[in-house]
Structures are given as structure tokens and as C-alpha cells.
Amino acid sequence: MATALRPIAHEDRLSLVEHLDELRTRIILCLVVFIAAFGVCFWQNDLVLEIMDRPLEKSAFKQGSEDPLERTAAFQQLQKRYFLQSAALSRQMARSEDLSPALRAQWAEFSRQAEATAAGAPKASARRPVTLGVGEPFTVTFKVASYAALLLALPFLLYQAYAFVLPAFSPHERAVALPLMAMVPFLFIAGVVFAYYLVLPNAINFLQNFNDDNFDILLQARDFYKFSIMVLMAMGIAFQIPIGILAITRVGIVTPRQLRKNRRYAILVIAILAMLLPGQDPVTMVILMAPLLVLFEGSILLASLFDRRAERARAREEAELAASDDDEELPHDHHLED
Image (tube, rainbow, N blue to C red):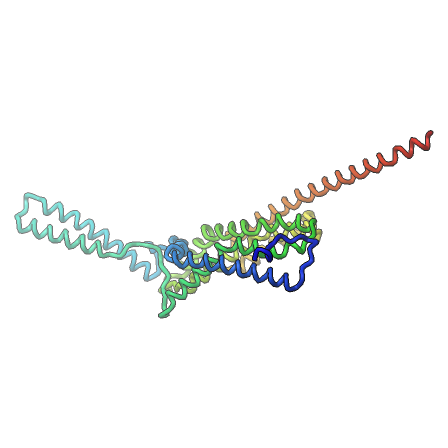
């Protein structure tokens, strides 16, 4: 394994068998890391599921909703407050000296019953996904742990993919590719974090409360986690816009000036992309568009800075080359004058 993963230069020539051996070794390493990450995530599946359920907090049962289930939950909370207040009043009556011992005993018993009834009322909490199939709790937990493991192992997987491809690049191409490749995992994680804290809660709150007076809304675990993971993955991929823009500008396919000139088309494409992403509601669409537009404009600015730096470097090299040519011609000119 150590021989297969030795540093490979651009000038090295490997046989097909050596390439396949290196690929096999890197795939085995990726599988080992993924299995280890999956073991940790499945071991801590309660924590992973709790993290995935946290965006549901905005859709907690609340008073004033038209959803029959939420109205029932709100009524239960009103009952709980009523029994707690009744218990407090009963305790005061049980301490009153104006009442007979028999009445004070009755008030004390009523206070205990009211407190017991209030304690039995369910707590007001966020929704939790429901499962319908016999094996769905296990299969859903397995899938969520797998996706969480993939997310944890992603930096290592990307590194192995880059390490396998990089020897095919020339030194100039590698100088362009390495900074771009290093940005990929950071941008992906930034997209996932943005989606988790801003996109998912607002999208779930809007969709779960849309037209809720006509439905008994139950959230199936399989569909909820699938929707959440799709949003997280989609935003992680969408945050790769700077990589694509920097790549096509550094290669020379387009220039930053052309991108600025055709900005309106980019805005249209971003709007269509946000519309096609999971959620498909106006709130989610606007929240998705905002960071993509910021990334697009920031990418153009960064590409312009790189272009100016490259132009200054070329001008400096041309000046040094011209100066060296002049130095070579000076002795010949002096000889002619003599």
C-alpha cells in the first residue's frame, strides 16, 4: 500500500496495472474511513437524529393554528395551566382557618388530583417524525447514519480523488487546480451549515403550516429525512459556484468582464435553480437565491483579482526578459561603435 501511494510526479509513467493498483488502494482507504465514520454515526444515532429533528422546532404546536392536531395540543396546554392554577388555589383553601377540617381535607385532595392531572398532560414540543412500517425505524436510522458518515468522510474522500487525478496535471495546471480543489470541502460544509440553520427551518415551517386547516398533518420520518438531506446536499453543491467560475476564468473560457456583462442571465439561472431545489415555496426560493447571488458576485471579484495579478506577473516577466535582451545586446553595440 505504501508503494502504491508514493508521491507521483507529472513526468512519471505508470503502467495500467500500477494505475489500477493505486486506484484500488485509494478505494479501500475510502471504504475504511467511511465504515469507521458510519460506525461512529450509528453508535451515536440518537444524537444524529436529534440534530436532524432540530429544524422542526419552528413547527412546534402553537395556539391559533388551524391544524386539528395543533389545536388539540394547544387545548391540552390550556387544560394543564388551568389545573395548575386550580391546584394552587386549592392549596390556599386547604390552609384556610375559616373552613372546617373536613373541607380543608377535601380541598387538599382536590389540589393533589389537579396536580396529578397537570403532570399527566403532554409537554408542548416540536413535531417528531412518525414511522408507519414495521422496519422503518431501523431502515431510516441506517440511512440517516449513512448520510451523516458520508458527510463526515467527505474531506478525506475528496482528498483521495484529487490525489489520484493531480499527477495527470502539468505544473501550470496544478497551480490552478490545487487552490480550487482546496476550496471544495469548505464551500460544501458552508452550504450545508447555511441550509441547516436558515433554509430548512423556514422551509419546513412554511410547508407544514400551509393550508393546515384542511389536513391532519403527520410527518413521515422517511420523507422528512429524505427532504432534509436533499436540501443539505443541494445547498452544498450549489455553494460550488465559485469553483466553477474561477475554473472557467482561469482556463480562459470566459472573462470576468463577460460575466459582468451577462449578469442578468446568471440571475435568471440562479432563480430557476432555486425554484427547482427542494422546498418549492417563495420563502425558501428567496433564501436560496440570496447566498447564490452573493457567491456569484464574489466569484467575479475574486476572478478579477486573479486576472490582474496574472497580468502584472506577465508584465513583470516581459520587462525582465526585455532587460535581459538589452544586456545581451550592449557589448555588441559598443564593439560596433569602436
